[in-house]
Image (cartoon, rainbow, N blue to C red; front, side):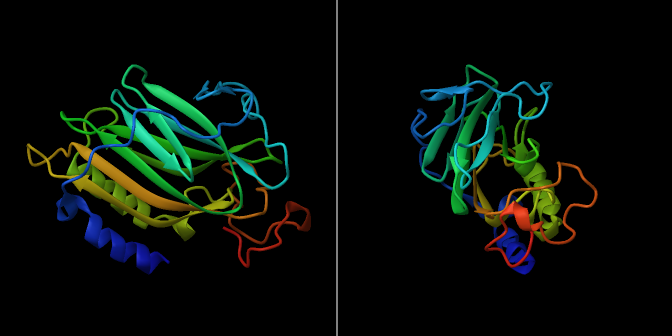
Length: 235
């Protein structure tokens, strides 16, 4: 998988893959949001200083996993996670959404668009139902603060190529697959007006059993009570 990622990034890195993009998605949120912090199409961001899950809560069944999706930028941002379409307006710097996803593959698209230069930061974090710890499933930022540049996108490429076993967080249970991105042509030759990131989340059935940051993560198989009934390897 590492070799596949390397080939994809050669095609999509820096100024090598500038394209003309269509308009961004609709300026609306359309999805099934989950947990006590959400109401309708809006969610409050959890208190980062609060203990454990910060009031996010856990799914009502033993199958789904709860994820936090945080969009940060002075401009508009979009995210599509599975069938959930999320939108952050320019009127607020940060927007959070909480989703319940089943095991398996969930396609993801992240979009930034601004005529003066794209800028966006997206974080997708898995909540451990057993540990009440959040895991950094996927973090991507370009131009926050500032404006996204081709140089910064190339630095992101180098960091992601070094990612161990397609995991941002060795303690979590969700891998990153088929990661690519496109960027529009830049009027000034350095700062694209649009960035589109595509990837797939590969959700394993087992529940993480070590807290985020545990130095022993990534070693050994999950215990029998963690629900590891399908994966042949741990993430």
